[in-house]
Length: 429
Image (cartoon, rainbow, N blue to C red; front, side):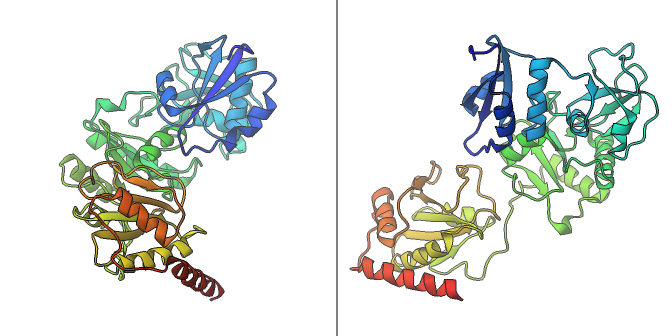
């Protein structure tokens, strides 16, 4: 950070993909020093979600909000670091980024100078023609826009009073619960309906619940904590603010009727009354659940995997995993060999089902973990070997605690040939 006056560190977690930053990094590599670091260091600089960008000037942290983890937002943010804050918006992308900034923003439509009594509010001058590109028609004058309620009104010299909460701007732990719709960033009619529903909930249950749309940078914190990055929006989610990673409640199925106010009210009431357990995302229990190779889902994971007395090997697969079809044949053969032992062989589609929060996160498929008997509460052992019956059985024997070993002589080479032949036959079907 000492090579150039301005420096930026991108703090990321183990599964972060920083492709979005490449354009900005290449464009400003001669003007800005860049560094990468882990989320452990990011916490020291106030990062609540990852990836998180922190700017420095002459080695001191700059008081500037981080950008969205998106190419255009990051690129414009880097330009502001060098040239100072943009005051006149000249492109649709600049206006889009301004509309996604947290808090409230004042816009001067066809006006250059800021209004009086601006206070600490952010101000931009912008032509009305730019707003028209978002199908928003505004006359000449000053307007204030609230990012959370997605509301724009004439500016009267003071911030808008709002019912909804921006988790980036306030301490959400001041109330027991936080909930909202996970939405897209478009200013469309569906989003307007969701905002209206959230405001009605806030009016009625605002003493214990904070509500707001979960979108943009504030979404990263909640989606990561709830392990719901891959869940298709829109859906409604609620958290206990004292511990976001403990669990979450969801209305996400097509049958959940998330746009119905009475449904949402009952959901919120049951959470506050302690009547609802955390939501487990799960496929239906499969017909082959009790085969030697146990097919588990989110709702059966704990009962099967955490049952003591067994060394339980779980393979997390997915429908799009290229290595998984052959692995499943390997696991079926392994399960047949171990069916009369204290070794239990299971598989689960990790992209469609929840795992308990105690199970470490993983980002690649397949991932195999062993849950030894007597140590189910400990972190499972991640398998890093080859997907062969012999190697997997030795892993269970060496790292398990039940004294498992194969009691029959097995020609492993012949078994692997059989598995390979079946795999190739299946590919031709």
